[in-house]
Amino acid sequence: MGELLEKLKAYAESDYYPYHMPGHKRRLGGSVLSAVSGLDITEIDGFDNLHEPTDIIKKIQQKSADIYGAEESFYLINGSTAGIISAISTAVPEGGKILMARGCHRSAYHGAYLRGLQIRYLVAEIEPDFGCNLGMTSIQVEQALTEDEDIQAVFLVSPTYEGIVSDIGAIADVVHRKGIPLIVDEAHGAHFGFHPAWPKSSCSCGADIVIQSLHKTLPSPTQTAILHVNGKLVDRQRLKRFLNIYQSSSPSYLFMAAMEEALDLVALKADRLFGDFLRNWNIMLERLSECHCLHFLQKANMDIGKLVIADKSGHMTGRQLYESLLHTYHLQPEMAAGNYVLAMFTVGDTEEGYHRMTEALLAIDEAIYSQYGTDMDEVACGESKENESSKQLKGPKLPPHELSLKEAWEGEKEDVPLEEAKGRVAGEFINLYPPGIPILVPGECFTAELCDYIQDCVTKGFHVQGMRQDNTVTVLK
Image (cartoon, rainbow, N blue to C red; front, side, top):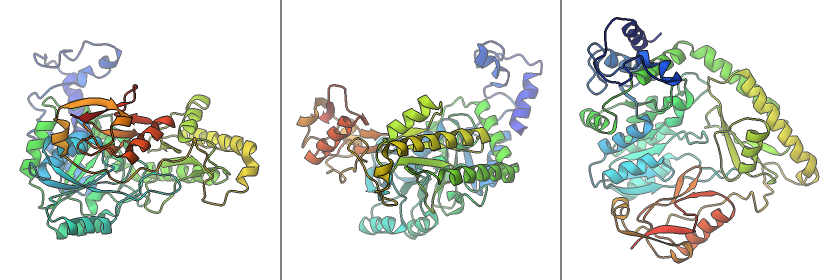
């Protein structure tokens, strides 16, 4: 049992009467709240304060830092979103310039907006068979930093949603030669560094700030995350100020206790938990190697646990694979993209989970092969025979940039039909979701190519955020 949870339990069993928040007074509530109300408190005597820790919270945060090999760690009870916005606000002064991966989470764009930053983009190469982003390289980062001396920080995502990891060590060396900080959104990599079969955490690869979502891959509640900081390029007091701004002033002790327990669990039982994970994963992949039509994303620099599945014959789209797994086999995947579906595995999965996914995919593969076996015999290994409905859409080049994100997002707007948007400046984000990478950022211009691409996405049934049902988009007046 974690130290904070033990203290909360002892307090719940004591005779102290709560003349303080929260309103359930540790006793009243429905079936959900009744299970935890005794442990749900506010900042009262003896329980420290997340925003100015001096006692138990300071102790458990330092324990977490030790687990990850970080100099200092901060619990995030508003998810990685609060950590990302705080990190960007800390690293780059208002109106400054940041080098940022185009495929960043929307919270990175929100951080840039709030600080009025100029953004220079890094655009990832595309994996040819699946259509997802590859990782960033040190060569790409070095070239951008050489071309633009005004960049004051670098922000990357590693691993990607699909599990592809960038060479953070090499990138950190390049960034640090410029004397600026490297921030890594490692939201999907909170489990890194606990077992040698998995990539190292960016904490041990030279990143200055690393943000991880504990809830994504570890046994911790939704909304729990952690931020690690290393080195001398980050002003720690400034970082604490922004964390206080962007996090709730009423932090959840339930979240913090759960985070401590989750990290204690995986740290103390890493060999067994990750050993079982690896064994089940390898058994599943070995059986799935029998598939004729389905293939699975496998890269040397890839996270174990991200099962990215596509039909290389092109007869099933990502959405169709998703629907089949969900409705026929009662398996809920993480998400579907154009021609692939993503299923996530963690230390929390059981042998049953691996078995059910394996049997479902083998059955789906057999059904495709039974119907299209003759066609499949003509498909060379690693190639894709795509039909129009499953064809992976290749996005256009970065659009022309007219205004800053802040100027455009705060400008006066109007809605126009997509076919009339050519030459207009976007007033809202246009995202293909998932994975949520912007097609257009406010301040960028609609081109004829972009308008055709967006319409093609809609016609093929993809979810385009920023497009209304009447086929209009928001532009600046």
